[in-house]
Amino acid sequence: MNRNFKLTAPEWMLLGGVTLILGTLCLAGLMAARLRHSYQSVQNDLLAVTRACQLFFDEYGYWPTDRERDYGDARYGREHANSLVMNALRAISGPGNYNHTRNPEKIIFLEAGTWRSGFSGLDREGNFLDAWGTPYQIILDADLNNRCVFEHSIYRPLDNAGVALWSCGPDRISDTSDDLLSWKEE
Image 1 (spheres, rainbow, N blue to C red):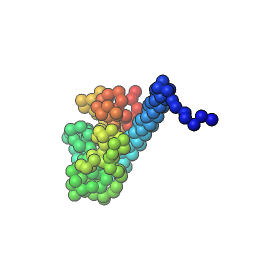
Image 2: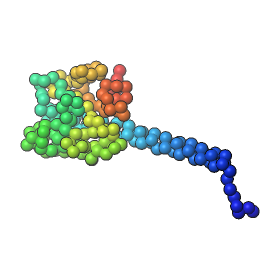
Image 3: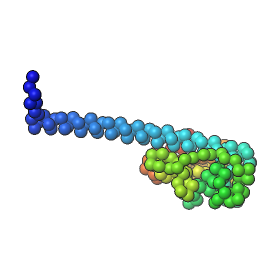
Image 4: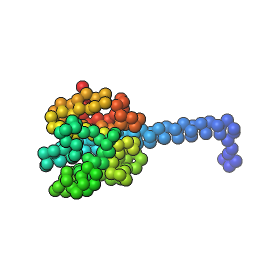
C-alpha cells in the first residue's frame, strides 16, 4: 500500500470541478426549497388575512377600514399603509383604529410575527409584509356593494367579494404575472 498518495494537477482540477458542480446543485436545491417555503407562507397569509377580515365583518357589520361608503372601495398597501387595517384586525389603538373606534370590543382577529427576510410578518410601523418584504395589497368593499373594484390595476372587479388580497411576489411589483392572489383569476 502506497502511503504517499498524490493527485496530479488535472486530477485536482477534476476534483475541484466536481466539488463546484455539487455545491451549485446543493445551493440551487436550498434556494428552491426557500422559494417554495416563501410561496406557501404567502398563501397561508392570504388565507389568514382574508379570514380575519371576514370575521371582523361578521362581528361588526363593516370592514376594518375607516374609509367607508363615500370613497368607493378602499385599497391598502400602495398609497395607504396596510397597517391601518392591521391595527383594527390586531386590536391595536393607532392609525386606522384610534382609541379602538373600529374594533371597540378589542377582539384580536389576526396575529403576526415580525418580518425577516424570507418570512412574512410586521415591520416596525405595523405593515404586514410578504416574504419578499413588500406590503400586502388589500382591497376592502368599503361601499358595501358586495364587489371589490381594483382601481388603476390589471385586475378586474370581483363580484360577491368583500375583501381581496395579494402579494406582489418575488419581483416586488404589483400587477405582474408573479403576483400571488387570494382569488382565482378567470
